[in-house]
Image (tube, each protein chain N blue to C red):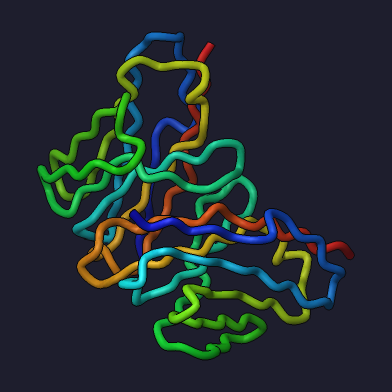
Length: 111
Length: 113
């Protein structure tokens, strides 16, 4: 049974600053690691995914994966007010059951 | 592109009442899901379905029934609504499970009076 924990629970970042979100998971069979973002009043949307150990950069977002440590993180550079949202990590594996989401981190970007 | 449509947006019912939420997708996706989100917190899996007429229980299935009568639709029934299960219910779809992207609807809020 996959357990997914995220920290911190909430985070306040100044506009233009860096936000760092952490996620630990329990299933060593996990292969794919998703980050989803949910703005208030909307459903979650896929932000990015990472499959290999190391860093993956997409614009202002960088995901880092360390499978041996059962750890994945997301860093948001040059944070914008539109980045204010609830962020979820979700590990999975091919042929696995439905996606299990983490506990979530609320990011608030202050102008 | 496609869209996930959840109805109704707000569902108000009395304690003990049987209530049904509906979800339609036009992505032609095989897999559909129902998640529950309490007070802006994490998503918990209730049911999912990998094809028409298939049902798989999630960790939170007790107290709920689901139905996938056709590929494009997935409904969720709260068998006896309780005040402690007021939440937002989110429907999603994907081409498969595992490494595939989930596409979510905007959610249906359940209010129990």
